[in-house]
Length: 324
Length: 117
Image 1 (cartoon, rainbow over the protein chains, first blue to last red):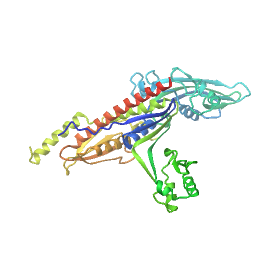
Image 2: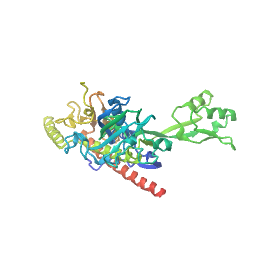
Image 3: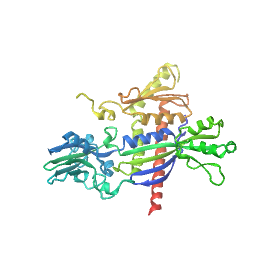
Image 4: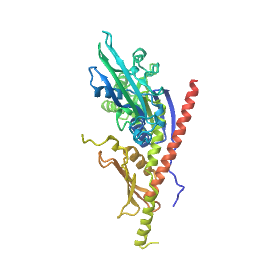
């Protein structure tokens, strides 16, 4: 037996754009199974914190208690701390009732409307017991990459109160994963695409008139091709805009010029787009996903007793077959 | 009311083994691995890695039912290897690949941060 054999790959990455809540990068020299596993883990298995238990003391608002509890759960919380926290299910310090510092963070909210003006209760009214775990918008910074700064200053709306109405509650945030409930998912969107390779058949293209070229270029629903103003040649301006819709190929066939363009997808290169809710940084989502995948693969290793039981079976089997 | 707990999807019940292995009684060097509380995420990765192994004649996985939280991985190898050996090799190679990927990504991040500051 050749124990030294290995079929390990050596993937490479190149980051194109990195912000706190946005990441775009190229992943090369691996296959779709790894890319998809990492995507799935970022969406469903990277842990964050979210409000999970709500005790309502007073609620005279128009929304019922469970409706408000649900809305509180959906508020993304800064969860850098989550990796080092325990799931309340595994917490020995509090027997999993979720009221200790190892597995939970407490929030309180106490608002009453005393004016004739409608009062907006937002995530900024939540008081946290841990300054590192706060609703995503409340750090006084515009975390959204394209959001309106003034809009985000106001926090996330929970409920509106009119004169005399009040809301008083205690909420417990716990660690969890998106597989359990989507409120724990740190992912706004995570996508990957194959890198397209577009080859134009120049000689065949020269048989087209300028109007035909224009017609063909415009048949693509996304802006992949353009016509060079000077040379009047068709050029590829943005190969990644190609959505694998094959419209340009169909168009070429319809124009009686099959083979005008050849588009192949490189099945070992991926372009990832990761958008975070703000709970954890997009780059940390990917790093956490790698760690979690490694842990998961380590978790499915055969236990020693399973291997040993089979080894004995193997000897017995070989003996019965008359070998050895 | 009688809905099962959500965590049943990813927490292995007490007393249940995470992974079991069963030899195929009719085919040499073939067997079935059953991993509890796993899904396509791990199943597909293992299968594709096994396909890279030249001593693996067959490798496939299935999620038998969406409400049965387990995957089944079937492997047949040449006499040069065994399903267990191939399975262990696949896991080792994947771990090394991911370790490398982690390092490469961290290096790329610090490279990117140096550009800004």
